[in-house]
Amino acid sequence: MFTRLVCSLALASLALAGPLGRPKQFDLTVTWEKRAPNGFSRNMVLINGQSPGPLIEVDEGDEVWVTINNRMPFNTTIHFHGIEMGATPWSDGVPGVTQREIAPGKTFVSRWTAAQYGEYWYHAHHKGQLDDGQYGPIVIHPKKDRATPFGLISQDKDTLAAISKAIAHIKPLMLSDWLNFDSDKALEIQLASNMDVPCYDSMLINGKGKINCWPAEKYASLLSAQQQQMLKNGNATAVTVKGCLPKQVMALSLAFGKPVNYSAIPADVFDVCNPTQGSNTVIEVKKGGKCDDKNGTWVAFDVVGAYGTFTASFSIDGLPMYVYAVDGEYIEPQLVQAISVGNGDRYSFLVHITDAGDYTIRHANTLPIQIISGTATLSYRPSGQTVTPKNFTQYINDAGRALTPDVKFYNQTLQKSYPPSPVAQKADQTIILNMGNTVTGYLWSLNGTSQPQTQEQAEPVLFKPHPNALDNLTITTLNGSWVDLIFVATQVPQPAHPIHKHGNKMWLIGSGQGAFKWPSVEAAIKEVPLSFNLVNPPRRDGFQTLVAGKGPTWTAVRYHVTNPGPWLLHCHIQSHMLGGMSMVIQDGVDKWPVTPPEYLAYGA
Ligand SMILES: *[C@@H]1O[C@H](CO)[C@@H](O)[C@H](O)[C@H]1NC(C)=O
Ligand SMILES: *[C@@H]1O[C@H](CO)[C@@H](O)[C@H](O)[C@H]1NC(C)=O
Ligand SMILES: *[C@@H]1O[C@H](CO)[C@@H](O)[C@H](O)[C@H]1NC(C)=O
Ligand SMILES: *[C@@H]1O[C@H](CO)[C@@H](O)[C@H](O)[C@H]1NC(C)=O
Ligand SMILES: *[C@@H]1O[C@H](CO)[C@@H](O)[C@H](O)[C@H]1NC(C)=O
Ligand SMILES: *[C@@H]1O[C@H](CO)[C@@H](O)[C@H](O)[C@H]1NC(C)=O
Ligand SMILES: *[C@@H]1O[C@H](CO)[C@@H](O)[C@H](O)[C@H]1NC(C)=O
Ligand SMILES: *[C@@H]1O[C@H](CO)[C@@H](O)[C@H](O)[C@H]1NC(C)=O
Ligand SMILES: *[C@@H]1O[C@H](CO)[C@@H](O)[C@H](O)[C@H]1NC(C)=O
Ligand SMILES: [Cu+2]
Image (cartoon, rainbow, N blue to C red):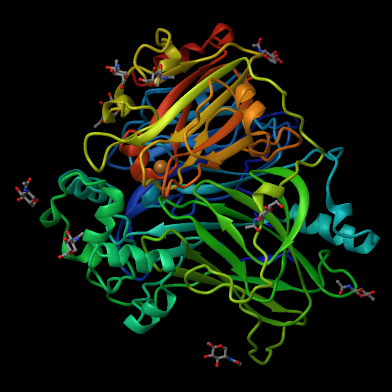
């Protein structure tokens, strides 16, 4: 389904044509069926018979209606990741926050305005269904009068014309981590063992991959210094046949000394590996289309970190990438050989292809928990005929590390919005959130209290705002104000958390080692000015907090409340979110729109 002829064919659009000015309508039918994306058969979620689901492709300014038909034997919802949902918070897809769940056999219509442009995605927001393949890409083509940064890539007229054609046919590449068992089983194991069990079977690109099971010598050669130390601390010498840290070693950094029931973890989770041929995504590119310039062809890709857990290095052998947008918005382009893609992230980039051949697209996990990678193929046949096989320069290894010192990674610290996107120099409200793990090794919190699992079935916050912050799980702001969220990793060690906020983008204004000793950013800047950047800082809809290895760390983001509604703030690692790492921000509670009666009544 995602094997496409880039640029040379018009893509069949999923949108049902409507008269001008009418909403663009999409139908997503969600089913639970047996498939084998990595060669191992299991039940998974399909959307219109496929995973990833079909592309939702619209133009900036369009009204969008997405009809979700739940044909699965359990409840579900779909969230539109990064879409601001201005004035339509009831379409955000978060059970217990913006709507009631969609029951089996029922239909929900999400109506929203595509007020932004760029690359987004949709995914399940019910239990761990994202991990079962329930996700798909969204592309919003910008208005013609948007300023673009492509003049910073080339000044040549033909090249710019080819680039603009390539962007109009941007190709999503959805990256995911994949288990041989479903998300309910994963949750069951976590609850029974009191520990996260992040040991995966495959890494997929557009829903295809295989099970590798590399020899022990290969795993040994790929160990990082950190992994060697972790193994040593756990009295172990090697990773498992799946490339995972043994469970007792993982428990040292994931269970934090809290009791773990190892006999509740089936052997095949960590210690059994049966290789498969699996399947491989092939993207064919031909010359002769409008994406050509004098020397070759331009192709635009949108990488989506649709991971349940991983953060991974992404690279295409032999093809440097011009990264020109992050989380949908233009930036000053960076020319790089690799990108670190976190959970929920989107990176849009261009490649210029001149040589015929098959280019390997690869992503490799970089979290210390496991050595695993996955690949796909970009096939370029300028004149259609067969070509002699040739290997292009490989930039990263199967552990996601650069193979040579000249391999450059995308650098978020250098990220500059294009055009610049100014941030307020001072906030009206400061919210300090101490992140950690509560009670057991499986429960997580943003501020000491885990969001209970039952929240998804609760009366949506949208229908009845919570009284002001009495439960440690609700934050309340006023419309028009500027808010600082300061995430402090107090418990050590603690991994990076990909924190995602629904409703709007945020600016990363600072980060540092140690405790956050100040009442506000304003006070902190006086003492540690170099830890902050208030001039065109990185802007996105999710940020990784700093790893807390040897001591606490803090990460400060600022945002403008312009979008009244209840928005979930959460870690995008599915097991952390299910373990309670979420809060609700009642943004602009003074200006919430009135929920239409059909949404109020839905599922009641
Ligand atoms: C490793 O071995 C040492 C010495 O036998 C022991 O004290 C320590 O508890 C062991 N650590 C783990 C994580 O098993
Ligand atoms: C550990 O898990 C096993 C298998 O699920 C179960 O039989 C046993 O009762 C559990 N032990 C404890 C102490 O909870
Ligand atoms: C493309 O070809 C032109 C000459 O036709 C050359 O000047 C230019 O450097 C080439 N650009 C690339 C990216 O190869
Ligand atoms: C390309 O690389 C693979 C893996 O290293 C190797 O097996 C193959 O022989 C190479 N092919 C060519 C044409 O160099
Ligand atoms: C990213 O850029 C910053 C600022 O120049 C620099 O300090 C940092 O080392 C760079 N990071 C990487 C991974 O190259
Ligand atoms: C909020 O957190 C504080 C500190 O952890 C705790 O004492 C209090 O009981 C919590 N309140 C609720 C309603 O959970
Ligand atoms: C976070 O927890 C602290 C300590 O319990 C509490 O004082 C504060 O109000 C909490 N913040 C929010 C936004 O709930
Ligand atoms: C919320 O505040 C923003 C920024 O001040 C403003 O543009 C917007 O109109 C306000 N929304 C409502 C519903 O008042
Ligand atoms: C499914 O969602 C409905 C609301 O549409 C709710 O009443 C029901 O309790 C949910 N069922 C489960 C099993 O969560
Ligand atoms: Cu997390």
